[in-house]
Amino acid sequence: MIPISRLRSHQVVDCDYDSRVTIVVVGAGAIGSVYGYQLASRHDVTLVGTEPHVRAICESGLRIEGAIRRGTFPVKAVTRLDAIEPGTLVILTTKVGNSEEAVRPLVPLLTPSVTILCVQNGLYSERIVRDLVGERAVTLRAITQVGAILRGPGVVEHTVAGYTLVEAHERAGAIAEALTACDLDGRVIDDMKTAMWRKTVFNCVINPITAITGTTVGGIVDPKLAPIKRLVIDECVAAAAADGVRFDEDFMAVIDKVFASAATVASTLQDLQKGRQTEIDYLNGAVVALGGHYGIACPVNAALTAIVKALEHQARRP
Image 1 (cartoon, helix red, strand yellow):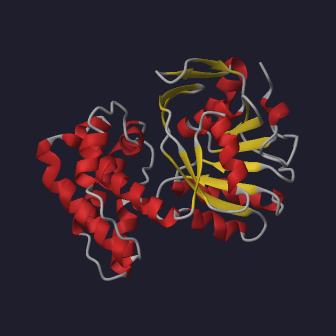
Image 2 (tube, rainbow, N blue to C red):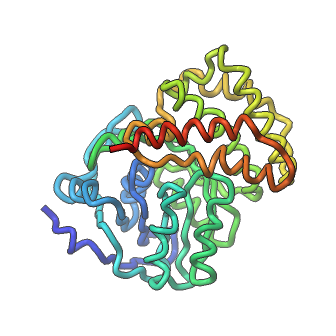
């Protein structure tokens, strides 16, 4: 067994992301663990996670299951950080509601050469981190299409290979190249706002509805769900337009085509099944709030938010 205490600090190898560097993944659950084991093939990676997950990884390695890749990977894992050296890439993969709790202890450890990449859902969720960090480090938004399920401490099912969109910045190109070299398909995107809204529309349809029906993501193509899908999409598109983002794509058709065969479980249902707080406030709830700011009513998104929060309360009851 590798004592957890021995892994609480890390060493910078280089500040050039094209070569071997230090990467810290904060909030290493399902998605964070997938990023961690893949990046560890070329870089000095440390996962920061919960004690059960960290202990299992330290004792037996990180076990990856699923069709994408199988195996056990020796990745460093800790429960907290005592130092962050200059040039470190911090990848934040916590739930948005846990961002402040995860990042606040890191703030005194930051330096301007550190980059925090927020690989999270939600509308403008990176602002939570930017408000905490200020100019102590560079904070960038990322959007992932990687899929994973945490099966238990130290065990993750890698369900979708996906890709990673990185907000345009002078450091973004090197980060994207590092991701791509580790099979995470990094892509720099100039219009992160549109990409954020696009994924939010998909999330607002798929996450709450499949959580309520208790189905895999593929269940979203059920024809009986078409009316509610249309209402959710229309509200989201209206709120996005008020926020300066206009779409000309048929979200209904895209959802039915892309997700018809998806056997994965959306994150909201995963959270409910495990008695955890969902991100509904940062998905449909955020659309309702931003829509209200612009005078756009979003009653269906509001109803879905209320239903999921009721299910969440029930799931978290002792």
